[in-house]
Amino acid sequence: MNNRPYNNFTDELRQRLSIVDIVSRRVPLTKKGQNYWGCCPFHNEKTPSFSVSEDKGFYHCFGCGEHGDIISFTMKSENVDFKTAIKELADMAGLKIPDYKPRDVAEIAREESYVKITDDAAKTYQQKLFEPAGEHALNYIRGRGFTDDMIKKYRIGYAPKNNIISGTFTNVRQDALIATGLVRHGEYGIYDFFRDKLMFPIFNAHGQIVAFSGRSLDGSEPKYINTTDTELFHKRQTIFGFNFARDAIHRANRSIVVEGQIDAIQMQCNGFPETVAPLGTALTEDHIAILCKANRNITFCFDGDAAGQKAAVRACGIVLPFLRDNSDVRFAFVTGGKDPDEVLKTGGTGAMKKIIDSSVGIIDFLWDTTNKTYLTSTPGGRSQAEKFLKAQIDKIVDTDFRREIENEYDSRKFNQWHKWSKKKNDAANIELPSVDDVTKNTLIYIVNRFPEIVEQYGDFLSTLNIDFDIPVIVELNFDAKAAEKFIVSLKLQRYITRLNNDKKAVLQLALSGDAGASTLIKDLDDELKSANEKLEKLMNME
Image (tube, rainbow, N blue to C red; front, side, top):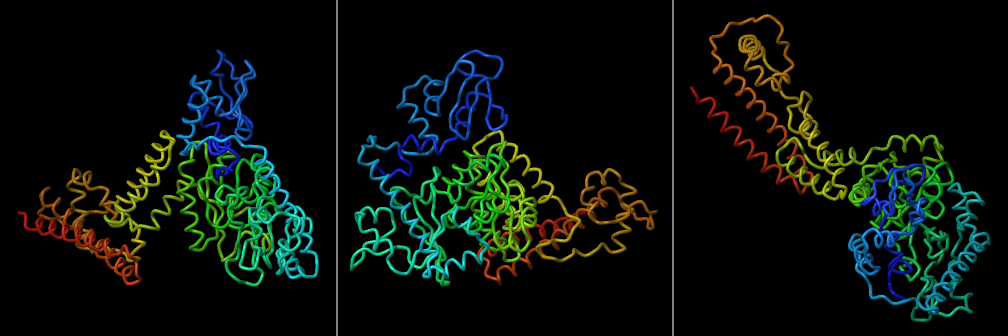
């Protein structure tokens, strides 16, 4: 059998590519209900009767009867043959066309035999869960809040310490058992891969058991082990709980992605049936492609610790190429060292709903991440932040949407990075010195005598917290040139103070082992040198 993750290459194309994306390149579509509608490209019409179903992966025209999938649409709309259409779609999906080999009857029969083996194994594991040897596993899962109905629905079981599969599946060929990943070949014959594990069956999108995830019960690491990739199972293309969540994703108009199997099941059973989880922490592009085919609205719900934040940043980078102007991708975090399972136990569905409702949209999340990662109060930090943001934004393939996001971030950068702030520098946590009375009275005099200078330096003057409406207290022998020189020198002095404060903060980062601190210090030193030279030159001017 070829090693493609789906039954054949055309299935992989259908799985990877969205029919809405393919059709909308040629037909303007509007979403109504669960489907998208537009005017049929295959006959003239004024009233849209051309329906596109993202879920089912096909289009249908109620006017002329045309019907098909992404392949037939490409062939008919571009007037090309099957091979050309496949090549074009493969290029779009970033896939290499394999050497074509029709599947023979023996190959299909072999796959079906593997499914029967994994299904029989699930029955055996579930039976063992309720026997004396599985008592500790049963107590554990019940202690996690699982009812017997939940155990039955998700077919949770127990793999005992002995070789239950290799020892009792004696009527099954060894090579078939090994091919399912349930057993391995050792020095003394075959042995079970899963032993003394709480067993979670992994279903494909059609509801067939294709693999297992086993959880340790003795505190050993890794906490979970999964079936290794087989002909039936490919971890990178399989989403835990998706077979149960698919309909709910359509009803809720979103999917929720959590980090673990138990979290996903508890969420599904406690008010959030649209919840799924990757197998382990390795979220992949294939996972996102599958979810986007079901619905482009995704809420990632991660732990609030450093690992959860890191996982969220990684998920953000993966989902950006799939973002469209009708997408709603959000990030929620469970804080206090808890996970969704614990929140549901202690606070119920209401507490979890508050967390999901407080989620942050991807545009704000990416902006917040940038500001937390880079010291944007310094030129070097801003440069690094700019490069990071551009690299992320460039992943968005919807050009109009990407342009809008660029404009949004340009506005934020101008207002938050490049303007003098009235607030203290959060990175340094140090207030700039307040303006002394002599300087204050001088500035009041300048503002009242030279309004044209105020226009030019109004932004800077507004940051000084001075009431310029009070009467002039001093009279100075200043002309406009001297007044401007005073303001510019004050501005440079305060800028130098700010840079020195930033440098102190960065030095603290260097002491804590931050690898990027040395680059920031060099940038600050260069900026300080330049600012001091400007100030000296200004003071020497007559």
